[in-house]
Figure 1: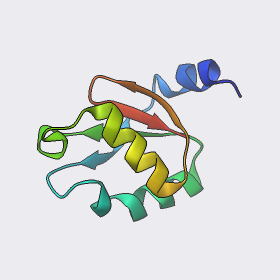
Figure 2: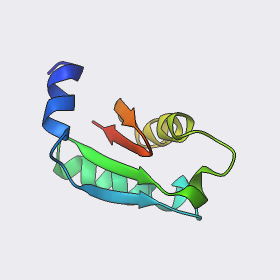
Figure 3: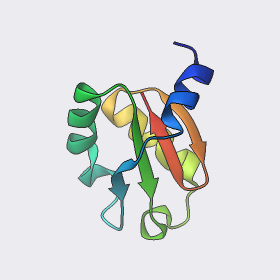
Figure 4: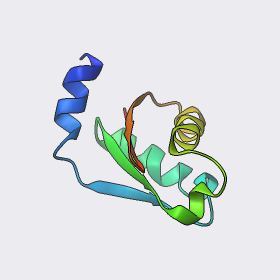
Length: 81
């Protein structure tokens, strides 16, 4: 599927992973499990997680940690495949 098709499919998804003050390390296992079960997962980065970094940087780091593709970031939310 193309990125555009994946973005369309992700539009109606609910956020299932929240990254908070404990950072991305605390959600890596949960995200990996969810990616095994479904094609797309929406991740929300709370203000406490962002600190001095951007959502794009955190999303890329999280995608690398679980071996996923970053489809898009919008606001404080990312979609991983």
